[in-house]
Length: 100
Image 1 (cartoon, helix red, strand yellow):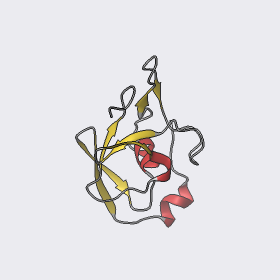
Image 2 (image 1 turned 90 degrees about the horizontal axis):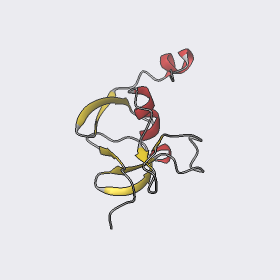
Image 3 (image 1 turned 120 degrees about the horizontal axis):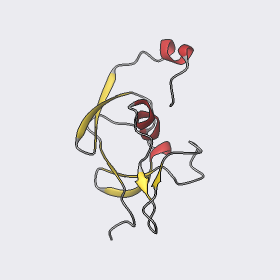
C-alpha cells in the first residue's frame, strides 16, 4: 500500500534498527517514526477504536488525528507518527480503550 520514494531510499541508507511489534522483531530505519516503520513493515492498523473496536491506522502523519496511537514500552496512547524508533523498542497495537 505504501512505499518509500526512490530518492529517500538512496539518501537514507542508515543502519537498521530492530524493534518489536506485538512481540515480533521488525527491522526499521533509524530516523523513522514508529508509524512509518509500521507502514514499511506492511502493517496498516495500529489501534482499535474504544467504542466499536474498529481498526484504525496512521492518517495525517503529523500528530493531528490521533489515529496512530500505540502502546510503546508499556506506555499507552503514544502517537506513533510523532515518536522516533529506538533500538529494542516494544510496540503493541492498542486494542479498545486504554487500561488505567
